[in-house]
Amino acid sequence: MMVHAKAVRKGSLHRVGQTGCEVVTGYYNDGNEGQSVAIPNGVKKDIPGMTLQTLDLEEGFWRKSPDSVEIYECLNSKHCKGGVNTTDLCSDGYSGPLCAVCASGYAAVGSQQQLTCETCSGVSDFKIYVVFVGVALLFASIFYFIFRQSNESTQELIRSQSEYWFFWLYAIAMIFVYPLGIPGLYTYLLRDKMEKLEAGQAKFEEEMGAKEALEKALEVRTEHEKTDPELRALTFLYESYEPKYWWFEILETGRKLCLTGFLVFLAPRTATQIVMSMTISIMTTRVYSGAKPFISDFNDRFAEVAMWQIFFTMFGALAIRVDLDGESLQDRWYFDMFLTLIQFLPLLIVVFMNDKIGATYSYDKETRASEWERLEGVVVQSDAIGIEEGVAGGEGGFEMRGLGREGG
Image 1 (tube, helix red, strand yellow):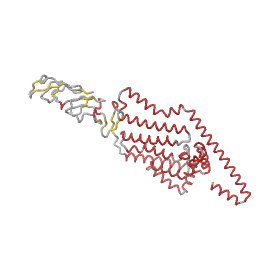
Image 2 (image 1 turned 90 degrees about the vertical axis):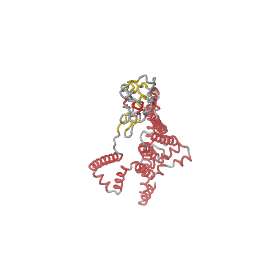
Image 3 (image 1 turned 180 degrees about the horizontal axis):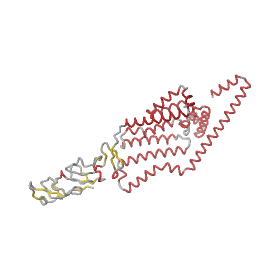
Image 4 (image 1 turned 120 degrees about the horizontal axis):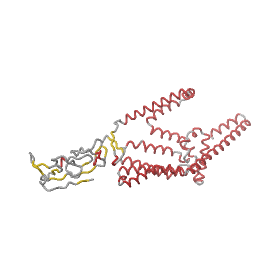
């Protein structure tokens, strides 16, 4: 609310004092040839002799400068303490026009009338990092000694291996360089098995339809899993994706790190941070919608919906940042409902499409189980044939079978 002072007839509301003319209570001298002006709302009215420069504002009001006749009501009366000094009208922790932003060293909680500015802890990032690492090392030590006591024989076996200390040191180092270590480890492990993971899907697509090529590539990949225990141990990184997208979990890990760890290097609660997160979200959404990396078509669609959810959440944060949600109470209600619906959209999809999800999961599980059973039969049959050949051909037959298995 803005109030304009209204001038009255010069000299009509003065009284003669010991030192000259003084303005009576309820009016102030605007400095323009002694003209008296009625005190507007927001200014204390029981103080005589005030001038334009010495107007004493009540709590909950603000003005731009000592020469300003425009008095504004603050969004929250507690933000503005009032007074004479226009550079010190805000309560502790607040600053700016209408005292509606937080001062340096204070963190904003809420917005508009509900804004509160809380004192920052003052703890440096380095101290937080040291505490985090210390706690991580403490828990690692506790679990290490518990595991050592309960698995003494297994521990002795591990200690005898040359790789033990390498991976022990690597694990300690990853506490400090997690953002690089985990994606790097994923990349190293998956690239080492790249040919087996890809399973010739791209080549099959040149010879047959996309669906047939996918089924053929999955069969080949399953055969590789059966004969390669190291590959089988990595299934949690790739089993949901098509063979040609064996690398997608690396991309997904990078996306999560960018939306969490990378953004902390930008000023918090700023438009820059929000716009950067929106950019990352829309780029990864385009990758998901274009590649469709999952074996299940439902998972492809569900993942894309989840990507759009993140984007619109960031879009809502940007709208709040520029106060688009506060135009009216009705608009704000619609805005809140929109953000709430966005947050629950993936959950609603799961609830209303539960039958389809269950059928998809059941189909994938049964298909994988039947494929394993088929491969078990092939391996058992091959072993039986190899044994018969070995018995018939003598020692050389066993050597040939052994070489053949290693090569396969």
